Image 1 (tube, rainbow, N blue to C red):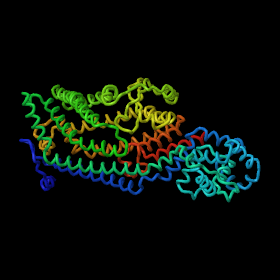
Image 2: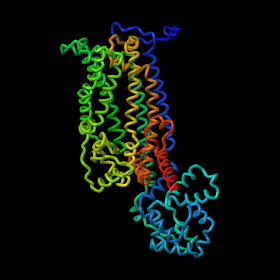
Image 3: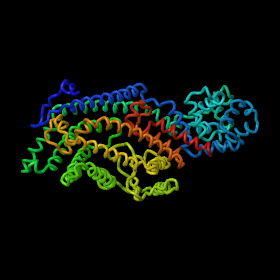
Image 4: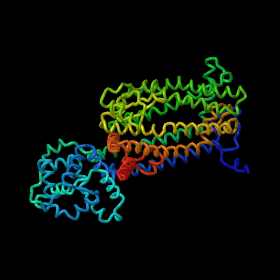
Length: 611
């Protein structure tokens, strides 16, 4: 049964501790092989994403263009009010299908001066004052983008089954918006008609006036297509190169016996201070882990610097100065050497106590309890003590916005116990934006990036926060904590089964056995496929929770604001608007923008139909 163990080619490490057990099972070869296969798969996904970026060249997807145009109407309250009042003035009733059918079949009859014809046009012209104002109004609000789609909607009414998925989606969009009356549609068509066709000269808008008009969301997306394409292409090139470098370095360190070499060098380092490693095993293990972490962190500095000062700076996102970049590294290393060492020593101390007390078989339970307590404590300590070392938190000064946030949080369907609202100076390092909350039980604190306040309106910001409140309302934070802790317990239990297997240590050149070393080797070998599968499954589950949080914000009455907010944040952050489905499924914890907008709109239309 074990013939294959001796027949497989085995790699001789460049450095091995004296007395290391010769392994019968190729743990090292398996770690290298699995890591390489995983890298190849992830590289394939990144290449798919890169090819898609090159193919689309940053073009706004047609479906997203329709969404952007529809959202533009809901962005300004006067649009819905004007269109609705136009419909009321002309006595328009019935569903949008009925109105579209009437407009398609009875357009000439409307023009003939009936109650829904000339009188309706007179009402509209009286409201706008002139055809030029009608044209300016329609153009400025982006409603002209939907004009051609209205005609497609009429075709959909005539033969709904033959329409494509995009037209069906458009129909749902139009059903969720205040529909213009037939008279308003006629007025819009008259404005778009050429001078020779209508007998009236088309209005002219000077170039100066056009420059004064604010760009619609769709126009902004289209105007930044090239910038978005270049940013996404550069970012993906960086990710591909970094992934290759990381794989080569990790494999080289494994095959060279880097870990056992550092383990022995740590012994020599402690001897300089008169400390025998055998007498201080916890100190030895902590020093070993910290030296390895510092070396890895320093190896990452060139890549982080290139990402910050080249990729991000080239596209206008980087705000970090060189002194800030250096100080961040220093502060991170200081935290790692102090807080990280204390946590690691505590974990090893708990395991050692279990062995001394004769409870070694249950050491994984005690270690797990200790780890869960630390993780729970960090959720409070990190935002209040650690993050202020890097960012400045100031109370929100905008009283009206603060009152709106507190009002939404106090709604019966929300009941989010917000106690404080802070603004974080994220613009000190990046132009990217975000928002989050932290705290336990009834003491929740909301944090807004200062960049977010400049990128969206108050109503859109409220909608984004309502999405975050949805995560809390649905218990996503607790669910994530429970799932991670359950997986951690399973990991420690399985490790306990092979904790004292000398072959695992010997395969990587170790003769000494230690909890930190053994757990690291276990995760690299036996547990690596399980850990990878868990990561992918957790990504899919996180995407589901994002949809659920979007739905919560929508049902709290913030669907329109959330749609506009998502569109604007994608615009400001130059997000990939149409990612590769495979790459997105395995790597993105948030669903693509189109999928989120589609889900929000469908939920909104579904609720309106049931009311």
